[in-house]
Length: 157
Image 1 (cartoon, rainbow, N blue to C red):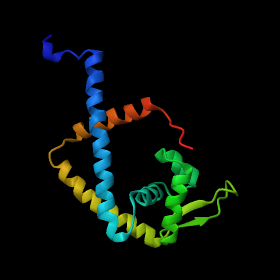
Image 2: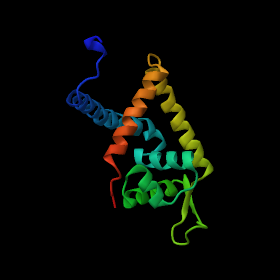
Image 3: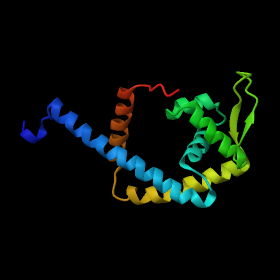
Image 4: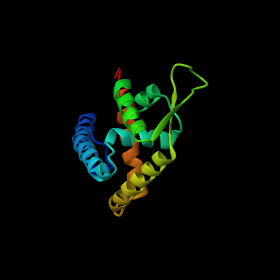
């Protein structure tokens, strides 16, 4: 077997995962800023975008469910929900499973707003996809999913 065909030592792999972390932080912060800049015309923050996206992807949810899904405090999510509700983007509806915790759902204007934002984001991501393969994206998803799993659940409340 050639040297190039052998797997790196565990310490080398750990160093490579550190490189991943070193990229994820700046990527997250740049993406957060770009989302905020792109959505400023609509008066939406990245926090409201996160709430709208969760509801778009998963349907009506409670504030605690949204907090757990995004590893955000219930209080922060509640503020974002309140801001979105003040703009008419979401509304509270009774929760048949829990009387004290309402479900939050998108309104028609909220559905329109998140669709516009997601379409704009997909146009930007298309640029990155130009020179990536499906295999490379699968590998990236596998690595990031594994890191997320290893980090476990964070208690944010």
